[in-house]
Length: 294
Image (cartoon, rainbow, N blue to C red; front, side, top):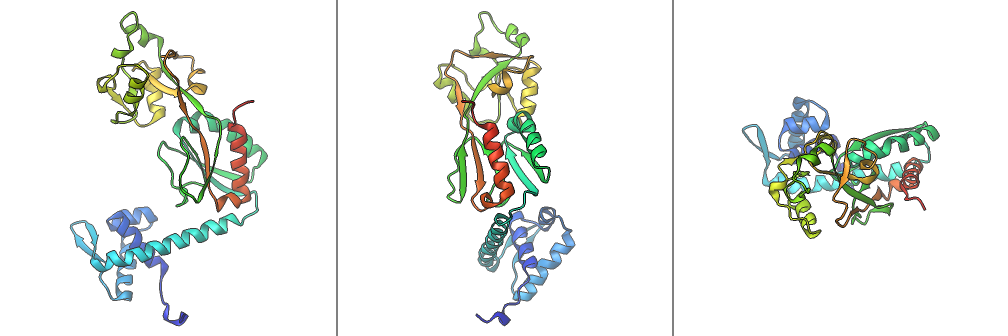
């Protein structure tokens, strides 16, 4: 290879890639935490360096030219290689110091993790923590998180996972709300709180013999903690892991006669990061704390 022939600025290539993915210079600038003029200069410099036009401008947006469409695939490969370099380098660290990012569902982040992470910080004060409370799936390959607590087994071959204690999910409502229903209580006419407009929960309840329809879900909120506050304020019936719901004095458990909902719980990390001592310490601490009692 003629190394003298390679004259390439990765920052310009990264500016090109992020702009292509975000669709505009302003959105790309926000993603990279830089200014739009700086990003525009980097993209223009790359176009001049390569002697090609990468984007067609239309209104406030951008679209890739045929040349841009071809070259962006090479830059994506470069980005993946840079990411793998970062992962491999992180995996070599044997220090029990540094930051660890943990992604978990909102209910777990709010009700399960605080006590667990407090004991971790007591034992390993050199470890700093960032907790991402989200019901979306964080991308461990892109380093959105180092460790994730998920409700399903990951399928990617470069992720390692450990199944820990499964979770029973219960239905809860306030006593006042239940008293407002017809007597005897007819749950087929009750108000349920949903997470989205899909029929997933409707189908699960129907499969358990409870005839509910979309009309039973007039209130939808994707944020579980907000939804839980609605339940505690008498909006209707909502779900929560029983380890949380059974300890909330303002609600009671309902629908105990139907087959329980059991959710899996998996601890997941990237295989490269698993060899990092600080990641391994946090991973093992979470696994021990979340393991079901014998």
